[in-house]
Image 1 (cartoon, rainbow, N blue to C red):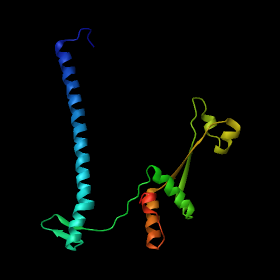
Image 2: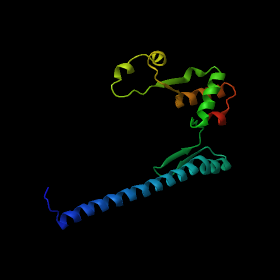
Image 3: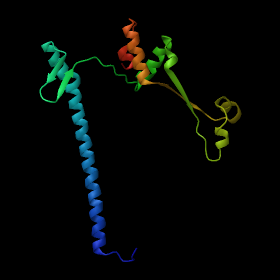
Image 4: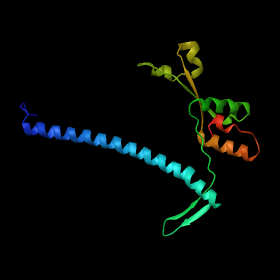
Length: 164
């Protein structure tokens, strides 16, 4: 690198920096547009089109040309975000369906403590005094399948409370 920076070299760096900022701004704008388009698609897909087809009493439509067909069918979605996760776990336990709950225990170790990290979890409190954290998880796909199975068998499932 030369000791003296020329105006041409600074102009090149400035042009690249400006292009970077422009691209970052464009990407942010396009991501916002994509979010808006996804919301609009979901509204049509999940609300407007099914309602319009339901009003006509049809559940399938074949579109002209090579576009294909659209069929209204029931789909199950599960979201175990926020408070719904705790409610779902409590419900799974109360209904003896807790076999799909998984448990993760994590312990953070500092530099030079790798040998301690290899010890078993039950030794941490008594022998080393490390504070461990516990996280309970439920596989969303398995939870969704179980709820669907239980509902189809006539069992009560608190759909809104557990995030279905």
